Amino acid sequence: MRAVLCRAFGPPESLVVEELPDPKPGPGQVVVDVACAALNFFDTLIIQNRYQVKPELPFSPGAEFAGRISALGEGVTGLTVGHRVAGYVGYGACRTKVVAPAGRLIPVPDGLSDEAAAGLLVTYGTSLHALQDRAKLQPGETLAVLGASGGVGLAAVELGAIMGARVIACASSPEKLALARQHGATETLDYSREDLKEGLKRLTGGKGVDVVYDPVGGDLSEAALRAIAWRGRFLVVGFAAGDIPRIPLNLMLLKGCDVQGVFWGSFADKEPVQNAVNIRSIFAWAVEGRVKALVSNVLPLAETGQGIRLLADRKATGKVVVRMNGA
Image 1 (cartoon, rainbow, N blue to C red):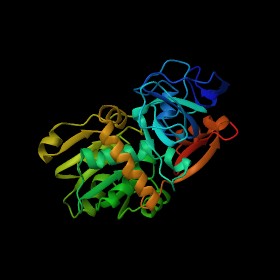
Image 2 (cartoon, helix red, strand yellow; image 1 turned 45 degrees about the horizontal axis):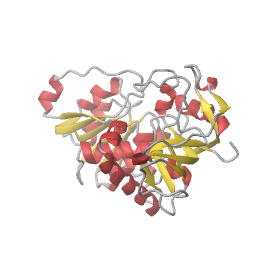
Image 3 (cartoon, one colour; image 1 turned 30 degrees about the horizontal axis):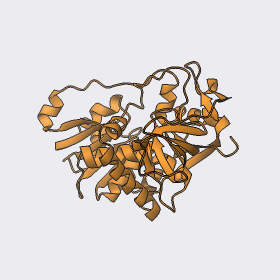
Image 4 (cartoon, rainbow, N blue to C red; image 1 turned 120 degrees about the horizontal axis):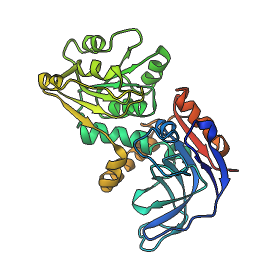
């Protein structure tokens, strides 16, 4: 098989493509012939040893994939060679064959492309877990999404709209906000032109927002928390800005609000049954067209580094997918 490898921590340009022996499944494992792997922002961090998950060298980036089962390990039931599946491995998906635990694979329905299926697990899985399982977002509530044009942000906008919320998309340019509106945002706020706290207060008539979805971190976190409503829920999703904020705890006391961590990878491992239910719902919505599953770039395996560079430079407006055909 062919694989993209990180042999030394560094920039995307340091990644190499090499030929490796085909893998064999162990007990409870499955080998999948990968059709597509999808990239995420954390791939820009993991190859620099700046992510909370720190794999041993060498390793392949890429956490999510779609393809067909080619071999089953001992004890695997409910799966069949030749079936289309999508799966999550944390890292290691940017290769033509992946070994994954059987419990991390979800059947891909007819009508859903490999590119779309590969890119739905992390961003939409994270966002549905955050909004449904953690915040318990209700119809009619107000949801503020920071970084609303990014991968998880755009997914949160779409899912919030599906769940009946009033979605306020927050981003740093008119172009990004226009994209969020196309995906279901009710209101928009450009925080490069207007103070985030004051803007959220203005858009909610002074009440504040019921739920904040924050994959950005940095200075925006405290500003958004100061604009949260009584008994609001603040979702800590990530720190794309690079800085982990230090939040004064008195804000939670004064607002009677909850701050909730969202780590989809651990959720998928610790609660696989609920995660599978969530992903099946997302796949069904994608087939119905309610979830758009925007893919902005499809690249060959040899250009995986270029795809990660697009994410690092924040030039991707949808999912960046690596296709294995001709790898």
